[in-house]
View 1 (spheres, rainbow, N blue to C red):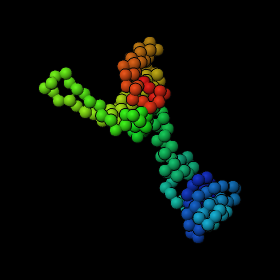
View 2: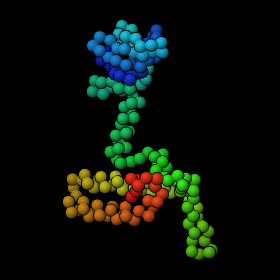
View 3: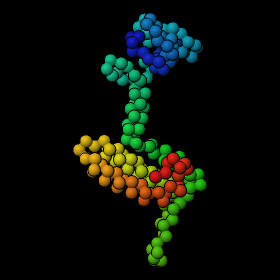
Length: 176
């Protein structure tokens, strides 16, 4: 393995010392933390190999798991999405495990129960989709400023309609 392919935090395998993590790289060697301590290693002379999947981009080498994690984080942030498990964390504690009961006005129709976590998750996903729509409208090169303003007004009214459900949120920063 070439010294230029190493980076800090990379997991490597040495034939004598076993698996370790690269802690420092200089122009001649790398310092790797193994189970029995930190050791200087010449990667080419010692037959050092990656201990994890890697991806090469533009001549560099990055652990595949780290590349994927960074890529997903950037995509999630750029789209304004939240991970599915994040929505329940925003739900106020008093609502967890609860049910929402829809009681019809007609006595011949049966009531419907919906778990609050499921309902809340769908509300948060709707909020996220509105945020994505808002970003797409604002970044559109084909819409005029007047059209962007009109569409933004529709989105604002949608948010306003959803404010009824703000009582479900744990923190005010998450409100519609």
